[in-house]
Image (tube, rainbow, N blue to C red; front, side, top):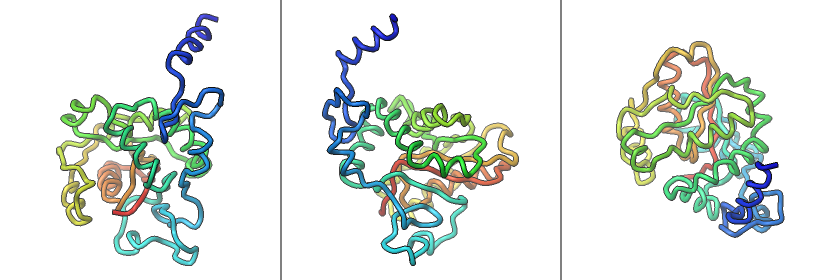
Amino acid sequence: MIKKATEYILSRLFPPVCPFCECVVEGTKSAVCEDCLQQLPFIEAPRCAKCGKALKSVEDGICADCREGVHLFSEGRALWKYEGNVAASILRFKYHDQKNYAPVYAEWMVRCLGDWIRSLQIDLMVPVPVHKKRLKERSYNQAQLLAEEMGRRMDIPVYADLLYRWKNTAPQKNLSAFARMRNLQDAFAVRGDALKNRRVLVIDDIYTTGVTIDAASCALRAHGAQAVYFAALASGGM
């Protein structure tokens, strides 16, 4: 009774806000307003068989990035195209302390990608880590928040400290594809020996060229992971 009363008072003082347009969404069970829900750029078939990016036609099979290089992950999916309100929302989540977006994102990730994730027979989830210096500046790792919310909903353990970033690399967003690869070379390391013959799902916010996921996959596979997959909130080009 006390818990319900507290939740009601908090909901009146701090009503839920749509993470895409920042409008109050009172009177609805969804945390996303109807207008935004109709416009969200969900990635649907046809999609790249490797990284899950949206394709123009089913005949393409895989995207240009995956045709040009060999990825170290087995397969991946993203929920939305990285554009418009989705891009703006993720940037607020990542850089402007909007940690309250994590449960909303996770709910949609599980709703749309849950069946695919379950089919992979994942043993554990691992968030893409940030360097300790950047973590101190931001106070949180957005990928970890997302992974923990997804893990709770899917009953999959999240190993937040297993993979770590020991190199304080430059931000990827302003780098060319080659510079991204050089930037993340040997950037990740693994603690402990929990990976042997385990199937791992790496969680990140944005997938672009796959360099970050490849670097993480390299470290995870070197420590015994049987297979590495990824799931991201959004994907897009450079």
